[in-house]
Length: 122
Image 1 (cartoon, one colour):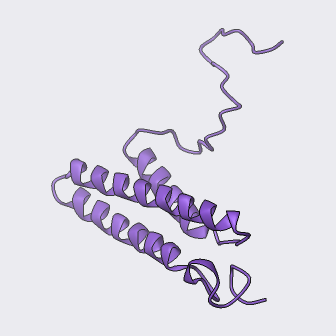
Image 2: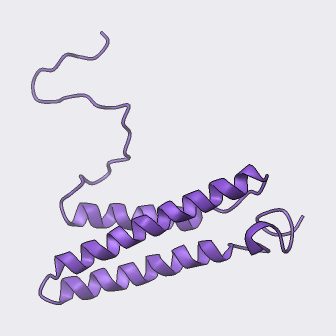
């Protein structure tokens, strides 16, 4: 079988690698990283950096919708562009102090460690 979608010229113009939507998201990751670096080097222009992250988040959501639509047709697409976007956003959320390091977004582990708490289902 051919590309990531199982054949050359398959759904969404995919063949032998990422689809155009994947390349677009990867390009947005690169430009977001550049914009954030420039923004933080330019007198900490945090609003510009945050706008770039919001744009990347929106592009990532668009890619997820695209992948979901093609998956309904049986296509199998590479999720690495989405993983790259999520990792970049997570790294900068930690840098800005909006998220703690090494938070795997595991919502199943919501233990309150404030010296008490209810102990869960025990």
